[in-house]
Length: 308
Length: 308
Image 1 (cartoon, rainbow over the protein chains, first blue to last red):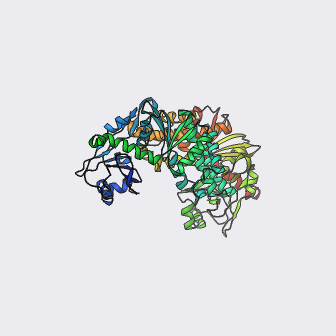
Image 2 (tube, rainbow over the protein chains, first blue to last red):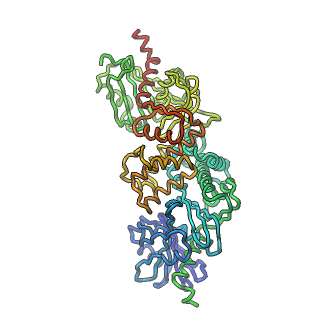
Image 3 (spheres, helix red, strand yellow):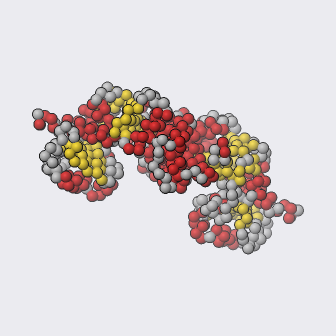
């Protein structure tokens, strides 16, 4: 691992992703696990991290830049929220220092919004936005997930944002509600399916009927034998449709940078097109978080200066 | 218990309520328990029922009329749904016969809506509507609860209805979501509180922002230390506000018969006034279900004829 100059880690509530990077940001090695916050807290954060580094043969002294819930109050060291507007420099300066005898370790702070725009917080998503900000992006970005973020980027900073509970509602309804038996054993939602499209249309057209449309999913299963696949696709479409109706209200339907990976990327892209968003540019969320961590690592650890 | 002519029972998913009535419908004795469907299914429905009757000294031969989830597929004997439009006679005729060596036992069917109006089902609420129907009620009735029902009554029958998942969403969000820690230990929601009013207003004004407003409850707790009481009141108001926005869309904002008991009655009444419903007439849900069961018992068991 001679060419590894630094390590970057995205450490969330339920997952751990680590990349060993060279000075140019290219991936030299990586590690992934399901060691989220609860599991890692019990085992010890430093022990978890160093075990991964050992497995890759990373030497002492190689610095580590992290982001995500590892910087929350329930994480390793709390990295207090930075207030909006927040840009690359502010986040880098406010990175929390993690005590370690073996290396420099920093955790990026999240961003908090207060005041008239309404209380809101993000932790992890700000890092995904950094490569876009570095490249001069201005406008609206959407980062779908358990807690979808809609972010206004202005003047090289996160000016404001709104979080939607969409992914969490989907999970709760799918696993713990009266809709759950109607979607048992369903396959992953097909973004091209008519049922997903129908759900999106319903959510967009009448978001105030969400509660009714959710119960209809159960009734359709009871009375008409609607299939689990179709029901799950409608559920997903419905919730995304309502989110897009809300996002259109607060952020308009202009061009959107969609920062997502895997299934969410295709679902949101399809739904956004249907909702009339002007243009959707897709950025891979994992590439973005790695590039964001790389950018702050270069700054924070003065890596370019050292090697210049 | 000489004057007891018949027994009526509302047997739901999580509760059992039994009244011993005389011919005029007056209550001579009652029993209540938390023996819902799952518990009763395990013990045996007949055993549970007869134990309550024994405790009251009810003789063999006294007939029993029941409604609620006890007539579902997971209940004692399935009472298949009657299709809309459904009135008192149709429900009485289709009551399921429960085999018993000791007495006549019937379970009222629920009502199913199919076709263009959208799949929907009710089981139990139809019985609460019967006294209003008997008294010539026409128009819109609202029966709030885990699954709130908005019912159109026309020509002495349930013409159509829409179910909203409001109460279940409240429960899921309160107990199992990221909002849960923010409402831990909260007191019962005060219908007169400014926070409940604010939630209702937000839900009515922008139902498409429900997902965002739900996340704000968490953020307000994290950043501003919003109290559990205030947060729970907003959560309740928000969900009821969105339901009322949806109900207004499908049923208008004309006069509403509100069939409810306890906390839900005050919360919905307050929220409906705020939402601009023309006139709200409150009927006690428990009185209604008992009166409805009494009316069908008289018909089904021909009690008046026997004693005439």
